Length: 244
Length: 244
DNA sequence: CGAGCGTTTGAGACGTCTCAATGGTGGTGG
DNA sequence: CCACCACCATTGAGACGTCTCAAACGCTCG
Image 1 (tube, each protein chain N blue to C red):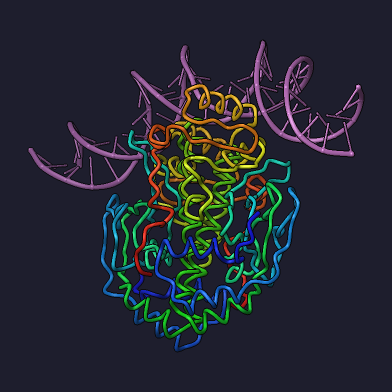
Image 2 (cartoon, protein in one colour):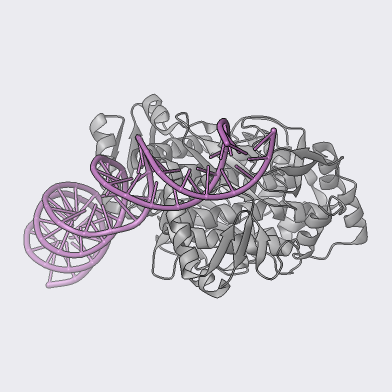
């Protein structure tokens, strides 16, 4: 793993939305504490907790999850490097869900009091952070549409389109190829289907030649067809530049 | 319809979360423009638009919707009086979805420039508004769990529990009875099921005697069983008081 | 080389969907 | 004041996507 400044990928993403002043950049850099390595399966924050920090994901993949008493589980978002996994806890206080690592992850803590200071002093940066949580909500809506109305194949195609777009925004896609070290069982829990059915759906996508997926490496071969199948439009990710 | 101040129901809800100063109350009251009546089916804001206002729902029911090219539709949230139907557009700029009226609605416009002024001058009120959008995201997660993992019966029970809690917070529930003037087809589009199946599921809930639903009037008779069936926990609605 | 874990395959079961027709009700005009 | 119309709720029945359970396969790492 390259040694980037901890907030680099977050900055890359924010800069896709609106210009960051040098002063704001510095403020971001001053937010984070020392990076920590977490193993796959580790919980970053539990449901019902009232954290005094938010967690910035520097590398690896994490996921928000909600579950029912009998063990049925739904991942509600997959997080990738540059994501705040629980920024909303700053204003929500109590977690309505948990977050765990789908792969080994490097994370940095961001104390809430430093964030609250920013909301007092820096309105524009505050709006950019607000926008982060609003884009999370937009992703949730996209997935409500997908889980409620789209077929297994469409959902899987959507996931790959979204991942390529989000990872691309933080510099983690190289010519359609990116790392996705997550298990089929976890992906199934996100897509709202059984692991068996996901496996069969994945085989269809491989057989059509639109993607290859070996080990942790995904290669998107025919992005256009994937986009058409998923009816993907990246507008909800807000990766275009327009002032906030 | 009683003649309440336009921001009254919003204030009731916000006050369930944190104390509002008289000055903040006044600032809210100064946000809204003249109330307007919209008929059922009217669109409040269309997908892809870049509104210069947000819309506050004063009475009636509206819904956020997303749809696919072939007409499949998913409502991603049902809005009730006191809700901002598109507050997120302040920072998101472009709408990722549309909002329409499920019943006749009274709404007030809230110009973005007035809201942006608040983000410059009033950090605490800004965090309360931020919290509104964050609770929207928490609702989306609750419904991702429901649509992805729960049965038709559980989803319907969840909807009724959530509506009773949200309407109760703005003074619209009287001894388990509340108005819900929405069509079965619309509710089905929200719950991610066909109208036929919703109708059959509704009959089960009526036959058990847990609820009655005639015309637009819902009566929750056995709230406890409904809560158990849905595994409903109102924490995600953030209707408890704790400072932001 | 074995153990453990994740992936892949097979086959019957079931929740929900679709299409189509019937039943009920509230509003409107003659 | 009644008759009609439009819209919504309800019912029936066959089709289908996805689920569950169970077993086999194949990596990768100690």
